Length: 224
Image (cartoon, rainbow, N blue to C red; front, top):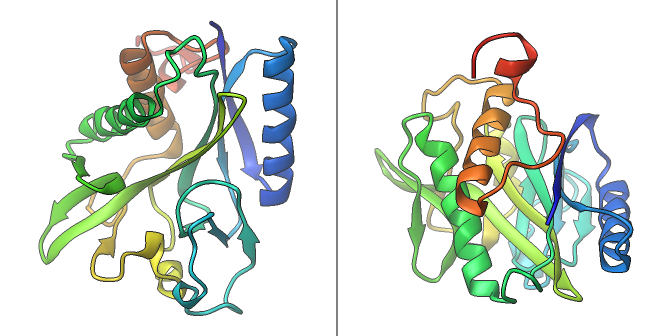
């Protein structure tokens, strides 16, 4: 299995991203394209997953709202948040969705650990959480869809987004817990540094280094 690693520059329109994911899934199924981990940022927007409830959209006129085929409820995407869309074939990976989600969570936890943050799972709640003064908060979300056992959609990790935009929704249907980011926790890192950590975590958890992946350390001539 060969996974391509692609970092998209700029802000990717959401509808275009969905179209490109669906095209890639079809190509993977046809055997004409490799699997893909696609790293993007979006302009500010809300997405409604298949379990979204209308009452959880608190401010419907604040940002564009897109209906999404991924699992889950309402979430926010915007600049400063790293979204990774995963188009991976689960057929040769055992067709075990629960194991796949656990692997994704382990990947996010490994990524956060590189910055001294202890990411944690919560029973019955998909995503990654951290403890902070005043209570726990969510730092990374997971929302997937499968088509012919090929995944698409993926994960979002809050690096330094505008957290006030979460005020327009009940994120992931959970009203009594907060949302945080690396910057909010006092960790100032660039998106390139986060991408490097994501790459290392992916290689560790999934057992392979994706094709086309070049870390900023290598690109800049530093050892790494």
